[in-house]
Image (cartoon, rainbow, N blue to C red):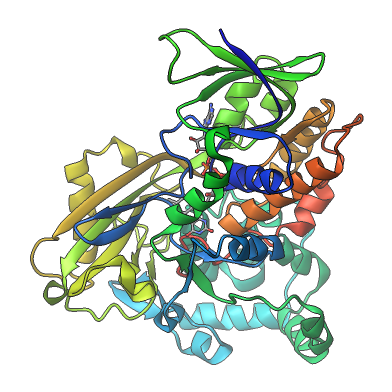
Length: 497
Ligand SMILES: Cc1cc2nc3c(=O)[nH]c(=O)nc-3n(C[C@H](O)[C@H](O)[C@H](O)COP(=O)(O)OP(=O)(O)OC[C@H]3O[C@@H](n4cnc5c(N)ncnc54)[C@H](O)[C@@H]3O)c2cc1C
C-alpha cells in the first residue's frame, strides 16, 4: 500500500470529471483526477479508421451554458469548434416504409403524412384547449396523449425521445426529462394561447438572454476526444488513468479512497487521502463506490437504470448510396415494430470531415430501452441488422467499406417517474458529509452541455468553499432547483428530432 494526500480528488474523467478538475486546476487548487480507463474522456472518445472519423459516444454538442462557452474559448489554441452543416436542420421520421420530414411549423404539421387525419384533428383540438396536469410526476406518454392525442405520442414523440434518451416514453418522467415542458403543462390549458402570449410578450426576454457564440449544433475539429485531451493535459501527472477506485471511506481529515493502480499487484489496492472528493462517475459505478460506507446515498440512486445502446458505423463509397442523405438523419417511432433499428445519423452530411472524400458515413443506433437485449447479438448479427435497416430505405447497393461497432451496456440514465425524489434523497444523503460532491449525467440532464453546467457549478462551489463547513453540497441545487434548472436533454444528443 502506498498512501498519498491531495486537496481534491475527482473520480471519473469523462466530461463531468474533466470539467471539475480543469476548472479547479486553473484556479490553483491542488487537484488529482483518477479514471479507471486507459484514456480520459469517458464515453466522449474519438477514433479514426480508414480515413473515417468515428465518435465513440456523443456526436454533437449544443453549447448553451456560458461556462461551457468560456471553457472552449480558454482551450482555443488546441481546440477548434466546428459548426454543423446547414443541411443538419432537415430531420426525418421513418413511418410506413418511408422517411418523412419532421414538421417544424403548424402548416407542415397539418400536411405531414406522419399522422392520420383523425390524429391531426385531435392534435388541433389539444393545441387549442386541453387539460392541465393533475399530478406532479406524470410520464411523457401520459402528458402528450392527454394534450395532443395518443398518435402524436406514439409516432412523433416516441421517435424523438428514442433519439434523445434512448428511452421509453411510458416510463420517463416529463418533469425530470423536460422540466420546462412540465412547467408549461401545469400552468396553462391552451398551448396555442401560451405560444401567442410568448410571441407577443417575448421580445424583452430575448434581449435579456445570453447571446450564444455557437447557436447551433457543433463538434470539434478532430472529434470530441480532442477536447477531452485538451482538458486533461494541463494537469499532467495529476491526471491518472488505469486507476479504478474501489471504495471511499470517511476519515478525520476528509476521505480515503482505495484504488487499483496500474503498478499494483493483482489484488493489492493503493490508497489516497484527500480533503474533498468529487464523484464524477456513471450512476451504477457511483452506487458501487458508495455502497460500503455511504449506504443511504447508494440506495437512493440504485434504482436509476441506464439504457443499453449499440452504434454501428457503416462507411460506404458514394456510388453505393442512392439516397442523397441531405439532413441530420432519421428516427424510428415505437409503433414501427418491423424496423430493427432506432434510427441513423447521416454523419458526413452534418460534419463533412467525418468521412474521406468520395465516401458516406452512417451512424446507426440499435437497442435502447425498447430493445434492451441488443448486446446479446454477435458483431456479425449487429452489422447485418444495421445494414438490413438501411438498405432499401436509402437505396444502398454493395457492401460497406467500413464497419465499426460500439457497444454500451449502460449508455444513458433513464429519468423514470420518481427520479427527482431519488436525486433529492441522494443529495440529502451526501450533504451529511462535508467535502463530498457528485456530478454526472444522472443528476440534471445527460447532454454534454448539462454535464458541463453541473460540473462547473460544483467546481465553483469547491473554490468558494475553501474551508468546507457542515454541508458539503450546500450550494448544489435542491430538488426544486433540479426540476426547474434542467434546460435538460434536448436536441443536442442522438436526436434527429
Ligand atoms: C452513445 C452516446 C451518444 C451520446 N450522444 C450525445 C450527443 O450527441 N450529444 C450530447 O450532448 N450528449 C450525448 N450523449 C450523452 C453524454 O455524452 C454523456 O451523458 C456524458 O458524456 C457523460 O459524461 P460523464 O463524464 O458524466 O460520464 P462518462 O463519460 O461516462 O465518464 C465516467 C468516467 O468514469 C470512469 N469510471 C467508471 N468507474 C470508475 C471507477 N470505479 N474508478 C475510476 N473511474 C471510473 C469511466 O472510465 C469514465 O471515464 C451521448 C451518450 C452516449 C453514451
